[in-house]
Image (cartoon, rainbow, N blue to C red; front, side, top):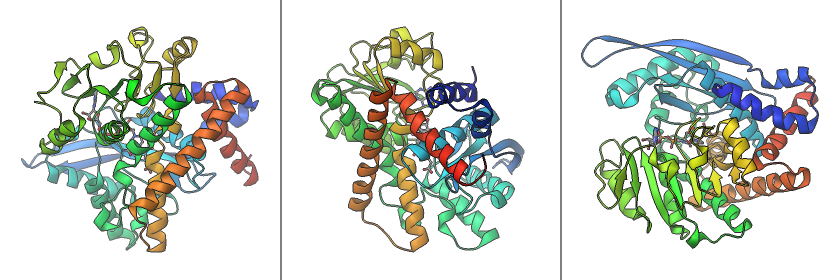
Amino acid sequence: MKAFEATRHFFNQAADQLDISEELREALLMPDREIQVQVTIRRDDGHLANFVGFRVQHDHARGPMKGGLRYHHEVDLDESRALASLMTWKTAVVDLPYGGAKGGIGVDPAKLSKSEIERLTRAFVDQIHDIVGPDTDIPAPDMGTDHQVMSWFRNQWEKYHGFNPAVITGKPVEEYGARGREEATGRGVGTLTQKLVKRLGMSADQSKVAIQGFGNVGSHAAKFLHEGQFPIVAVSDITGTYYNADGLNIPKLLRHKLAHPKGLLEGFEDAEHLPLDALLKLEHVDVLIPAALGGVITAENVEAITAKVIIEAANGPTHPDADKILNERGVTVLPDILANAGGVTVSYFEWVQNRQHYRWSLDRVRQELDRTMNDAFESVWQMAAQHEVSLRTAAYMIGISRVKRATELAGLA
Ligand SMILES: NC(=O)C1=CN([C@@H]2O[C@H](COP(=O)(O)OP(=O)(O)OC[C@H]3O[C@@H](n4cnc5c(N)ncnc54)[C@H](O)[C@@H]3O)[C@@H](O)[C@H]2O)C=CC1
Ligand SMILES: O=C(O)CCC(=O)C(=O)O
């Protein structure tokens, strides 16, 4: 099952509870617009290199469309479509005045130099600048992109349209970026992990955590959970799994990542180094946090997962077949459209600040983020209890209902 088919499956599970007609389901699921563009750059060695870029604008019933830009070799139209639709339900679950979009380029950024990535970003903007904008579609960071890419993107877009930093979020703090955006997704994951574990009667210091992916989201989630007394026994990145049954030294791991030229864990010595796929199969893990790619928890590997709680920091990490098995086994899954919504929430705060030419303190950002995440968690929890459905179905029910209502109010359906 491909990525969009998986999100369609989860959508339909919730739509069944809401009794939505087939024709309205199709209208809500079908993306507004899908763009595929050629992105050609000259490499440092003088040769031309061609890449394919995508932007899928899924739904705008609740406001301008919002969602990240991914640079990864597996980016394609189907994945962008799935991720864009997740953004529609996610922005609705946390009640932001946005719709959903997503895009990126099929490229392995680790194989390009910094100046090649800059040329790639500028060439991509040349192709899509007239379909994005502060009132239409506002990109942000995702896998393989960061505040530097956002800065190049903004600079290139402004060459066509003039000064307007609200065209993109996740910018450097010294260039109209929001304080706290970089940590926001990980902080939201941490806040909700603490809340969920407590709700389930487990204690932080007895809940062993494994985190797949140690990039922006995974590393900030690790920092936050470490500060909250959770023992983090394993983390992984593309260089493998790093394991310590007594708990990893997270401050040391974070320093190691900062010092590594590509931000990797390669060479970290205070841990057992295991293969990449070992992380999902570790015994004695209570909380598993996928924070890398989609589609990693499948019917084939789900039996090996021992965790009682899964927090979906990544987008779309759980295959529907695996999700069914996890539900039957009583594993609590906090779904992506709630768990990782901290990033887009602070992106919204950045956009608001840019439009008002005003800057919030880090304390204010954190307070408003924590409040937004807590409120969304409570609504999803109550919906799940009331309808006796999983947290995923409950989150989709809230997201879909809000988008459906906006669509009906606008007279579109
Ligand atoms: N950056 C953000 O604000 C948000 C990100 N997300 C999602 O979180 C996930 C991670 O995104 P970022 O942290 O921003 O990306 P990133 O590019 O900063 O980091 C990705 C991490 O995953 C690791 N990785 C890649 N393939 C792996 C594999 N097969 N096994 C283990 N580790 C692997 C990389 O080495 C790196 O440590 C994605 O699914 C993204 O869509 C969701 C919401 C917001
Ligand atoms: O910050 C944003 O606007 C979007 C982040 C994103 O791509 C996501 O939540 O998956």
